[in-house]
Length: 377
Image (cartoon, rainbow, N blue to C red; front, side, top):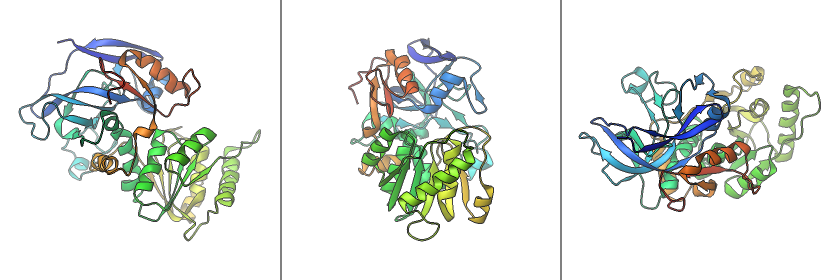
């Protein structure tokens, strides 16, 4: 049956809506009619560059992975959801058999056979119907909209980075580099978990203003890089300026317990390592250049804990839903633009440009599913 319009990446900056077969489901799978999908920066990277790290688009691929929808069909072995349920979709299925999965550490690339939506060669969720293992569908409470459900994916990324890997405790201080959606959600999670101080860092003043209204207690706009100034020299100067302006120290209550980089920028990573407290934790969330220079002597002397964070793991979606349902995190506030499915290419274009033709800055763009009204939330 071919009633499955899908937004397909054919090549660099080359997309079109194509009809795809409706997927057949197995005994423990469900078919979800996708209603709302958010655009992620990785999808834009695939669109513009044709790759993200080692993941290279070698054949046409349906884009996107931040989605929610309504269960359309269930396999005979499914007991946790039923037809008609509204669900958030965790778009990464693991083998469930390897050592990592059995240890409950299926996240990211730890499971060698993980299959992720919109990660080559696997198709994504910007389609009418998507097949999903039933245990990766999370029923939405009545208070959550389908748009909220779509944003459980990036919120789960933030939950994983802040709560699980960052091990944030109440009354600790956090600094987040990068005020895009994931950075903002990291701030929101930190605030919800009781952080005493949440510092937002970005090079765009408007984004810092947004962060202050959303979840940050403090903001920092880095100085300009001098002509010919090496990146390491700048990050050293930048870290010192940040310490002086915000009263950051190496020890005590004014120290930064947890630093998260959601920008991927080398100078941000260098600065973050320099402002982290002795014995603190640095979590890398943003994707940037593969090979960068960091001050390993600072890592060594301060006995920093460095961690990489990719996607999410067990319990992250459930906590994300609970945070929104309890009113501790507002994800809807991040949605800056909405588009119908037929205008998906325009939605990607403004995300790539960072603003719409009217000059409004982009935070999160939401695309409705085929034949779904953009006002149906």
